[in-house]
Image (cartoon, rainbow, N blue to C red; front, side, top):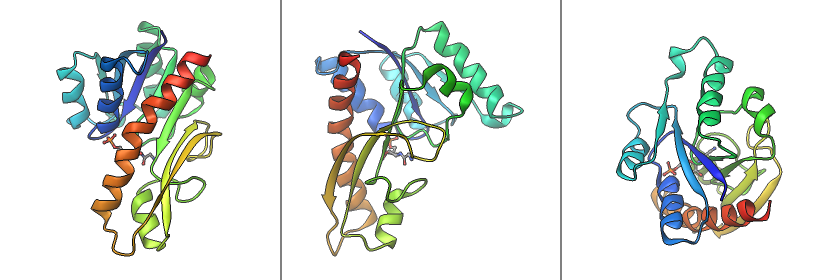
Length: 189
Ligand code: GAR
């Protein structure tokens, strides 16, 4: 089984979905570490409740991105991490991590990339009055949500869609799709 680290910045509902899939046996992976860049984020409580070790940092405590990514790298090496699973990690990953893990870093994004990359993809879709959106899982490169796409799932946006209803629809898909795709990825390589 592959050793994975999940990276998250917020509530961690995708992290929870991954843990649930591991616990029920549909995802075969060792979730050995949570990396979080927001002290106080709810995802940390989820790690505690599930006895998953975590590394939490504040970017402002480091001189630059290279410095905190080197620190993260040390944590990843300590746990023999083979795959990085970004699940609501709201930072670009730079060469410090990519040099070690290219092809082994995946991200989930709440739109049909290349549409609506970056922050607030759900708000962007509503603002654009798009009639569909969805979820993308992709490999991570240096760009903003630009890496090769692994899987996508489309949803219709209704005429009376609200931010909350669209977010709920998207997250429901995310929670099902991410564990399924991770299982394929982690067991075929
Ligand atoms: C998820 O919807 C994920 O797709 C999105 O953040 C949310 C995190 O929710 N990621 C991005 O927007 C990345 N650009 P969660 O903390 O409840 O899993």
